[in-house]
Image (cartoon, rainbow, N blue to C red; front, side, top):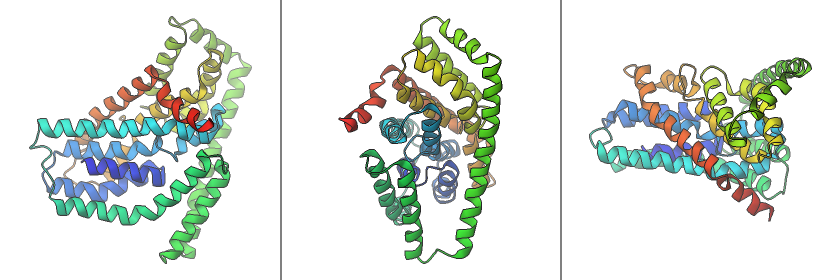
Length: 337
């Protein structure tokens, strides 16, 4: 199970996409864990939660979108989310260790050959793209290139890797272009709708009404943070992260700025909160990605029950970041110095 978390973190740094990570781990790791008599709830919860690490560990689509919406440089946002992402990985590993020690029958040791097989299979697939990702992120972190320029270099590097492995074909290029067009079109349609909503909302004075509501809360900025995080968490049960990012965040960000809240810290808090939305039923995408590739005997109720401890862990790390903002701001400050 710990291997799954580590590999999930590596996949997160490689893809930044929840679906790809969950499906990959579900196909490779879940059968091995079930074959060695792991508790299905622990196995499913570990895979589903590890798959969401791509939303907080750079490069993350959520971080890129939040950087644009809130007005924070994406490079600083990547640096600010790096330590919280590692904390989440550590929290998952510690929980699994404690669970295995208290319930050894639910998490029996996997033979070394199976563990080695998982690592070998993942390492052979991940090492070249991981080097590429480190180069792309390093160029952003150290100010060598902008995120857009680094993305272009990353795309070119990925094409070269596929060429070296003799897997690049015209059909795959066409499929990649079509998928990119669909995704970009979907995001732009949501952005157009969100912009229209925002114009009407501000035109009717809704932004001032919401600002007055939050400014009137007891506790000042802490009251605002608690209510804002609670609002995003509840909305995550029913809305996709794109809708929350383009509709809700533009309303909350100016209020946070007017209260003197560090927008970099605020953006990372939102990203961590939105990551949880991939695990919360009834519309947690990670849960359904896993169910689609899980064996027939795995019921959705087992996945729901298995994911609950990991949701609590994510909320715990979120509370830790709220209590200690330096966890987020330390690395960006170090890089700027």
